[in-house]
Image (cartoon, rainbow, N blue to C red; front, side, top):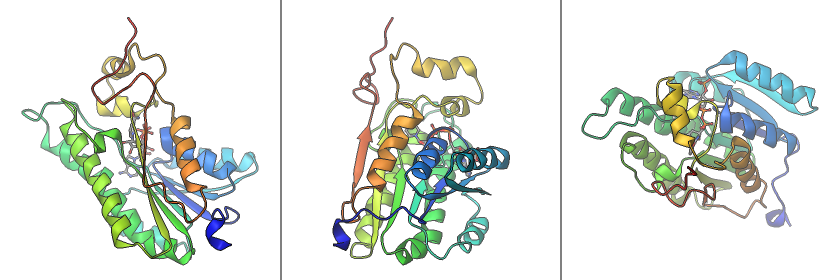
Length: 259
Ligand SMILES: NC(=O)c1ccc[n+]([C@@H]2O[C@H](COP(=O)([O-])OP(=O)(O)OC[C@H]3O[C@@H](n4cnc5c(N)ncnc54)[C@H](OP(=O)(O)O)[C@@H]3O)[C@@H](O)[C@H]2O)c1
C-alpha cells in the first residue's frame, strides 16, 4: 500500500541548505548514504564542491550549488533546475551575538531573521511545487530549542528561531491534504566547528566557553541522524516536532558542567 511505504529514496532529490559545515554537511552525508541524490547548497563553493566529491567517491550521488538563501532571485533560479524534489532540509542559519535586549545590535537581529526565517521562507516557497510534484515531499526545518523557549542573552536568535518554528507550524496547517510533510527538528546544544565561533565573531575563547565542562554535547551527526530518521519514516508518518538535547542539558538554561 502506498501509504505504508517509506518514500523511495532511489533517484529522489534531497536539497540541503547550509551544507558547507556542521549539521548540514553531516545531513548531506547521511541522506546520500540513505540513497538520496543530495544537492548541497551554501555560500562557500569550495566547501560544498569538496563535500560533493567526497560523497561521490563513497559511491553516492551529490552535486554542489552555491547559493545564498537570502537572495530570492538566486533561489528562484536554483529552483528551475528541478522537476521534482523529494526532501528540502532548511538548515542554513545560526546566531550572531549574545547581548541582552538592552544592548543587542539591531543589525545582528536583522541578519538572523533574514537567514533563519526569510532564508527558510525563500527555499520553501520556491521548492514547494516541486516537493508536491514528487508525490510525497518532505520539508524539514532545523529550528532549535531556542525556537521553543528563551534564555538571557539569546533574544535575537530566540526571536528568529521562534519565527522558523511558527513558519513550520503554520505551513503544516495550510498544506494539510497535500502530499508534503512538514518536519521540525529542534536541537539543543550541538558542538559544531563553526556555530559558536560565528556567534562570537571568531572569538575562540568565548566560543569554547559555550561547551566548557559539558561531558558530551550533541554532535552534528547526532542531529543528522534524527533528520534522516524523520525523513525515512513511511510517507504517511509526519514527525511534527522532534526536540533533541544532550543528556547533560535539561533546558536552555540548565546545563550540567563538570568542574
Ligand atoms: N550548533 C548548535 O548548537 C545548534 C543548536 C540548535 C540549532 N542549530 C541550528 O542548526 C543549523 C546549523 O547549525 P550548525 O551548528 O551546523 O552551524 P554552522 O556549522 O555554523 O552551519 C551554518 C551553515 O549555514 C550556512 N549559511 C549561513 N548563512 C547562509 C546564507 N545566507 N545562505 C546560505 N547558507 C548560509 C553556512 O554556510 P556558508 O557560510 O558557506 O554559507 C553553514 O553551512 C542552524 O540553523 C542553527 O541555527 C544549531
